[in-house]
Image 1 (cartoon, rainbow, N blue to C red):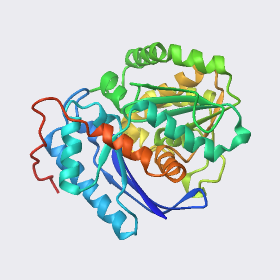
Image 2: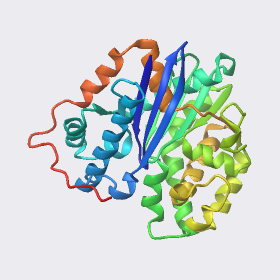
Image 3: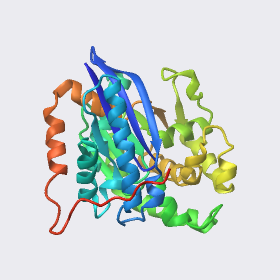
Image 4: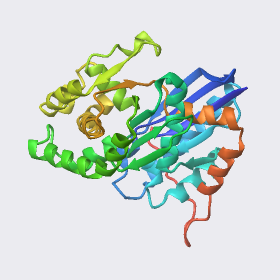
Length: 335
């Protein structure tokens, strides 16, 4: 069986086509389209027509690519940047009308649950009671569990892109006071969730997401070219040093550092502050960096439970929009 997943994130639209045999999703093709939606959508604002048009084109390309690789219609979902937009429903309906791909949004708690499932499968049962941290562009997901699925999940508005716009807009590098204000907000938002994780007493902890992967590389973890099976650890003390280092540099200078890509350089500092603060408050001295995350979680859940659970999620995403909501009339995206 060949399955495909489309993940609409804050920066990119990613396609994974995988063979789902033997209980393990083995990728046969991956592709991405860099839209940088988070830069085109104001916090809490509408998705502009031009950005929506670009999204339609990317999803259309992803759907046709999946078909060429022999996969059925993709399991397509959008994360916080689309989910939080007031015109989210209109955008979802427009994408489906224009492309035939049924794009849905996942609640942050479902994202955490699916990411936890992927991390559990990757780490195995020997990891015991497991804590999870996942930093996205718009939100931070935290989970803890002893079994296949988590016992506790939380989704907080502490994404690296969101916080960069909120605290560091127009500052390159940001002022020390702005960094302190950001850390103060993260501590306040995480206080109760971190207390729960400390109380649970995890035996192991994992971090997922591109943000954590890049921060781990900056702190000395092996590069991606060494493959996914190389163990990668991120220590809290090293991340503390990385915060100090990143805070003194401009985005251009950060992009020259090991692991930090140019598209994510501006938000790397906010991601480091969130990661370090989360590890400190939860009492985690180090985390294992897991290469599997939400896309693999979607594939695994689909393989283990069939299509019914995804149909239910998609149906919720397509509930009628408020009165007056209509599909968008899109402009042609710039080439």
